[in-house]
Amino acid sequence: MKPKCILLNSILSLSALSILLFLLTFHLNLRTVHKSFNPVPAQQNLSLLIGILTRADLHSHRHFLRLVYGAQRTPPDVKIHVKFVFCRLTKVEQRLLIALEVLRFDDIIILNCTENMNFGKTYEFFSSLPKILPQQYDYVMKADDDVFIRLEGLSQSLKKLKRDDLYYGFVLPCTSYNPYSGYMAGMGFILSWDLVQWIAVSDIPAQNQVGPEDKLVGQWLTWGNKGKNRVTEKPGMYDFPDTNGRCSHALIPETVAVHRLKRWDRWVQVLQFFNVTRVRPSKMYSFDK
Image (cartoon, rainbow, N blue to C red; front, side, top):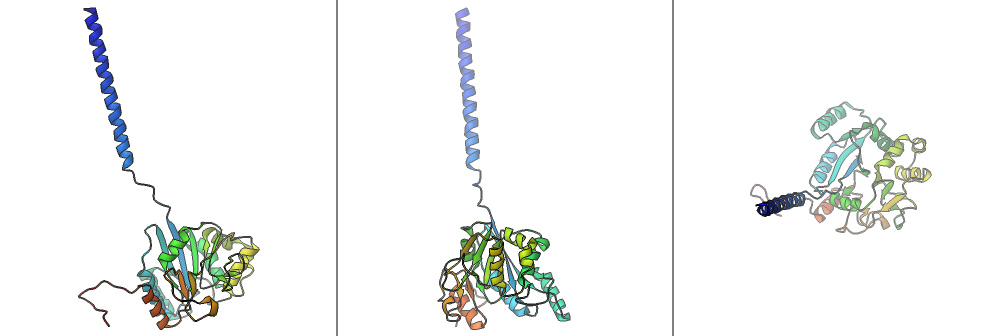
């Protein structure tokens, strides 16, 4: 009887071991299957605030620019907010109409300054942002209201760059490709958020506000030993063809920004070239010539 008991116990032990191995293998397989369905970590999102410096009275032009930027698509991992920036309101009609714009679009920033170009408005813009914004951005762009920005092109360009100590734009003089000499043109230049924070607290910009605003920004960064990561976006940023000598060239598919669009015929050429106004065919409307 004893040998039979030993044999039976051995069989039971082997069965238990087989069951244990089966359960362990099954569990590991489940973990493997579960892991394979976990999403791949998404690329870190990129955020950009574009501040278009303009004047309060230019209501119709703001509406036009809202359409231009609202019609463009950006990659899903890029967040771009466009704001219109001007100084204190001085007229009753301004307060009325701009209050309606704020209620409808929420894309207005009113600075505590008297309207100007080269007497501190750009400084007021950058230095105010850390105090007034509900969130911070990776980058902040100062742009003119006569520039067309291709949001997708700009997004792809910024994705390749560092997010700290960055100074980005169209370096002047026009023929230069050295971003460490000269400064970025006022058509549209970008600072990383840490530089915006520095402008808000440093005495260097605070004590040097009068003069050509784009040149001043470059000087602030040089004097403060800031903007060590400098990038000039050429030939992707330029002036409209035949408007500004060597700063101008033909429209190209790789465009990031086109400047000097002070006439409607120029806007028409640019928007048509980049198919911004292309619409799907519909029985409800026709754009045939």
